Image (cartoon, rainbow, N blue to C red; front, top):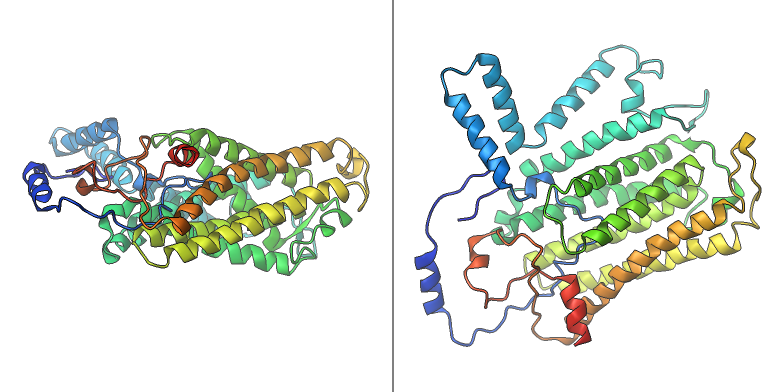
Amino acid sequence: MSEDNNGKGSGTSMGQTTANDLLLRPKHTRPRRTSSVGKIDMGDTIPGLATMTTSRQAKVASKRRLDRLSDSKTHLLQKFWLSFREMNYRHAWIAPLIILISVYSAYFTSGNMTESNPIHMFVDASYQIPGTNEYGKGVKDLCFVFYYMIFFTFFREFLLDVVIRPLPNLLGAKEKSKRIMEQTFYVIYYSLSSPFGLYIMYHSDLWFFKTKPMYETYPDLTNPYLFKIFYLGQAAFWAQQACVLVLQLEKPRKDYKEMIYHHIVTLLLVWSSYVFHFTKMGLPIYITMDISDLLFALSKDVNYIDSPVTPYIFSIFVCSWVYLRHYINIKILWSVVTEFRTVGEYRLNFAVQQYKCWISLPIVFTLIAALQLVQIYWFSLIVKVLYRILTMSNYVDIRSDGEDNNDTESESISESSFNEDELDTKSIAQESQE
């Protein structure tokens, strides 16, 4: 039997079960209907630590710690340290939680919750303009992003390990537990970030994806409190995902290069838009990605449980993707060509941090265009899946060699069975060409 994330497992043999299953299986088994939605990995679907496959080295290290804990010669302090390491190995949210509790406790019990408190830069927005709800920018914002990278590590791992873990069993889809857990986390996160972003846009002059205000008030040296919290919070979320991706804590997927490319472009957009005061361009781009990702994660979840509404939700997702990630983003890209120079001031002046000029125009255009390119690539894969959904009576999923195939024992019983949610994007492209 395959082992779970904590390195636990039972040594039962599968040989007899496999033989019985093969004997009882009809000679002409009709493939199960599925939408093949579950295996298109976008650039922002990074596995959490709680659902990653445990490496052999980690299992060996865990066994050594347990052996030392059972050894009567081990000192009390060593046992305490080994126990902490083992608990954190099994539950990755414990260490981030300790850091969060320590910092928050020190901050709220200090009696000084102003910017003069050195802890303030980590837990709340800095550089408030006296007497206003506007906030400037500075180096302290990096401390805020770093601290909330730790927060999102805790938030994600706690949800995966404690809150979401029972869900696959309740839905009767234990064999796809890891994938359901991952996508359910994204449903939860984007269900929070999407309305938050829309709320901020609604209370700004950008509603509904207007482009002229992006340039009329430039440079936007300050932002309202919630605007800044949302912007830096999103930066922390993306940076946390990028760290997991770059460290390769999980076996790289086949679209690893595309994911790296996507994260590099996104983080460059986040950093440059914030530092050079193009935050009004960054906000709508954040929102377009969050809403489409919410619907995409939801479509994958319903696909994992074999819901009959999968094609409909996936179709809604495709429509949202076209409108948000292409129409709106290309609208913003077009505004760089048509309005960047004509709306608002267009000159370089370091004294007043006026960077909307001939130097920044090609840089802004290139970054947004680069993001659009990878989204066009993903959309080509999405269209192929949608075509299969609409035209084929039986949808066959294609096994990805780069994926973890150890979710359950049943997936390894027979290679002739149709395994869901293992859609290899490269194989789909190749199949469509044939």
